[in-house]
Image (tube, rainbow, N blue to C red):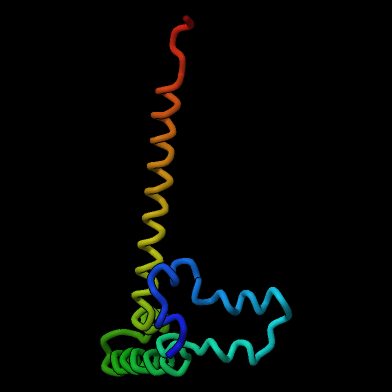
Length: 119
């Protein structure tokens, strides 16, 4: 199994599972053999993704042949990678709310520390 799948949540969050390769890269230029210790996970392998994409694309072709609707490449890609798009959208929404909350808190802080009457 690859190092990433064996890594803890903390290690994944801070890319600690990747640290040995960083140290090799600091000492010398990386070569292809250095990357062999980090195999590609099955869910990210092109063979796996192509298999998923072909399944959804065949479904799009069947829908077009049956006359229901035209085949759309974007629909097949979205069906194949919908959870990645959803996760990205979720993180974007969190970012927007964090920025909004930050400005509101900053406004309250400046209002609190403003001297209204000189003493």
